[in-house]
Amino acid sequence: MNEEEVAAIEKYISFRNAELEKLNNLIKEKRDHLPESEPKPITLRLNKLDYEPSSKTWKDYLKEENNLDTFLKNKNKKYKKIIYKIDIDSANGSHNDIINAALDFKSKKNGIALSRINEGAKTNVLYIGSCEKGIEKRLKEHLGFGAKSTYSMQLHHLIRESNLTVLSITINIYPFEDSIGATLLKNIEFALWYKYKPLLGKGELDLDAKKL
Image 1: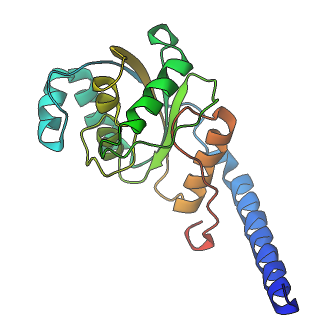
Image 2: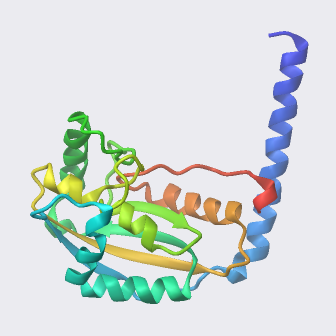
């Protein structure tokens, strides 16, 4: 590399370090505003469906899952900016069962966009994510009722096409004030992702200072 290229790299690293410092200071400022406890979580028992899930069947699915319907109506009404953590009930299978089912599912190349598989993960935390406009749309995608091209857990598709017969999940949510910036929300998600290292999905550090 020539001197100009080396200087450009050093300039970029300095910029990123400054952004990290800014983020670190902001998190310290907001520490007292972090949620002390989340609203009551919900546990869902996911069985093999006798139909292929799609956006058209989402409302019918909610009629069958009254507790989920109530949960979504309450949470979407009260909370828009949310970090969510989805755990699995180990009684329904080990983390290896989930990983193996996901790897087999992905190998079939069925055109369904599955979240990244974190091979070697040993935890009962299935996924950690965030949303800024209520949780229903994202949860709809994770359960397999969204677009097949949208990367998500696609859980009902996964169950349909694997040896899994049932999967119990618990959805925990952490609501935040509307004033929180998108970048800060994303990095709090990343911190939790880094702590729990879930089975599916990816965590990414976000340093967009304009959205802090």
